[in-house]
Image (cartoon, rainbow, N blue to C red):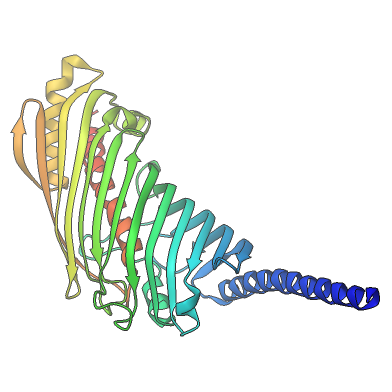
Amino acid sequence: MKRKMKILVSLVLLVIASLVVLWFSLEFGIRWYINKEIDESDQISGNVGTVSINPLEGIYTVGDIDLSYTGDATDIPVIKIRSAVLNLDWKTLFSGVLSGDMKIIKPDFRTIQKSPPQKEKAPEGPPLAKTFKKLIPSQVELIRITDGDLRMLDQTQPAPLEIDITQINGDIRNLTNTRKLSDNLFASANIIGTVLESGKLSLKLKFAPAAEDLYFTLKSEIKGIRLLKLNSFLSDLAGITFEGGTLNIDMNLDAKNGFIRGFIETVYQNVSFSDPENEGGILERLKEGISDLVGEIIEDEEERVVTRIPVKMKVQGTEPDVLFTVMLLLQQALVDAIIPILGDMEAGK
């Protein structure tokens, strides 16, 4: 009896050990496969550091993600993510459907603009939408983004201009690539963040992730960027230093039928400079620079200048990614709001 019990215990331990080995082999195999696909890609480079699996709960965690886009686009996105947790619904997986939700923790996005953007053409990012459409029928009901950063570097200026958006939090809902899972193929995103340690970003996006053409509606507003935060960039190049004032930026854009149309509105309020004797002349030159370089001044008061920039861009490439395109449009809007100050001040310093 004892011998049979020993054999039974040995078999149980062997099964457990085999499952553990299989578990770790599966984690290693998934990480190897992901990194192999990255290595073989013509446009994506980087690697995934860790993979852990909790098969009983259907939870997959991918950590230390470091990716960059190596295409010919003007803007080069770089992504670093501490961890991405995917919670799968096993019942749908057995029927050939990928369904679940995801949490992305501490993502760090970076873009580098190497040459001046073409105002008539939309910026182009990596074709992630094409990859999404090629997956098995998929529905990610919720992607929650926690404590992210977006660092945008514009190298087209006399000195590099870096704009940081920090404390990015939000969610993306209903990422679906087939009507088999949902009659509604539109996804939505709601994102908040802090621009230049002061301005409050609120972004709402409705888009079609699996559409053949770029299709989205974007409403974004940034309230209260402190102009003092631009002094390190403007003081040497333009010979000015802000004492106070704020900048607001509203962006309303629609993409369909191969074009992005809409407007960007900028509001400068309570602007003051370190040279009070010449402040009136500086403000006039600022208004002229905004009008010449940006667009129409629709409101001009003593403490408030409002401009509206019309937008009409042709979509570049085939099947561009919506989220990266929106990220690059946001960068372009911020630069367009700041550079007129430099353009006119440099001539008048």
